[in-house]
Amino acid sequence: MPAFDVSCIGFCVLDILGRPVRRIPEGGRADFIEEIRMTVAGTAGATAVASAILGLKVRIVTAVGEDEMGDFLVAKMEKFGVDCGLVARDGTVQTSATILPVRPNGERPALHVPGTAATFTFPEERLEDALNAPIVHVGGTGLLKSFDGAPTVRVLKAAKERGRVTTFDLIQANPETFALVEPCLPHIDYFVPSIEEAAEMAGVQEPREVARFYKARGVRNVLLTMGGDGVHVSPEEGGDFALPAFDVPVSDTTGCGDAFTAGIIVGLHRGWELRRSAAFASAVAARVATGLGSDGRLVSFDDAVGAMKALPTRPVP
Image (cartoon, rainbow, N blue to C red; front, side):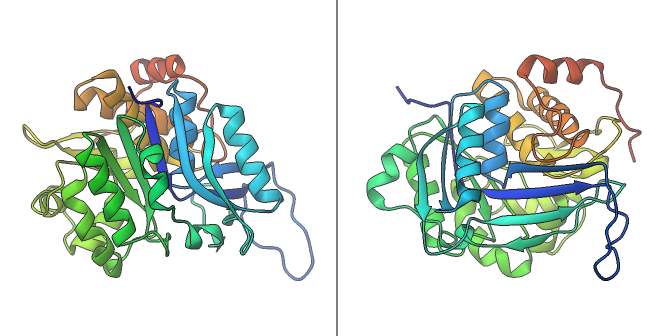
């Protein structure tokens, strides 16, 4: 029996966030803002933390530097209950980190140091331990310079050979990223990108066409997150459907996509049908959007279920 509920593999980054930032002060002057936080982020790191908050037994497979930022990430993940036994420490570069001045509307331009995101990979002898969960999530293609491409395909293929359910997300994707993503597609059960990134790689814009593009190349289920417009779901069986976003006061959209993925993983773990999983995942993302950082105001599985049942939804566009 696998030792964990989900193994999250890939991009983990330290986010330093401040809000609300209306401008960058001139020269050496200062502005006062309401809040600054440091959080665990990234398409593997934030998904791992959110999954742990929601009650899953989680392993993270990633790399951090031999610096104080790496110490923070490991300590914070362990505090949430994430197993960090396969977190490598790389002394050749700094821990991947991002500064995010969050605008009043929740948008967040980024200043990013790739650091350990660019050097992350893991040897063959760690593969079995990395896949020691019924659900394997790979996140970060596009920023994982050493892991993108053949190493990612190897892990996804090995996961499927062992009967694992695979989920997949990327980051900062553009048309060139598709060359890295395409060989992964036949090994992906649940592809959970943003509509912007998925459409840019596919070269089409309408959600149904975007989903059809990826399913024609081997993906079994496509879930396109669309921010305030909700989510478009194209399941392996049955017709496409869309769900509206929940209507909440948005503080910061950092990590909402990663939280949504965690919600889908929880639904898979619990054996829910995909529509219920997507509604729950939307509620998880809404809880994150109302606070600052990738964990926002996400506190527990029961709270997220309550949000799913009680929150109003936004008008359908």
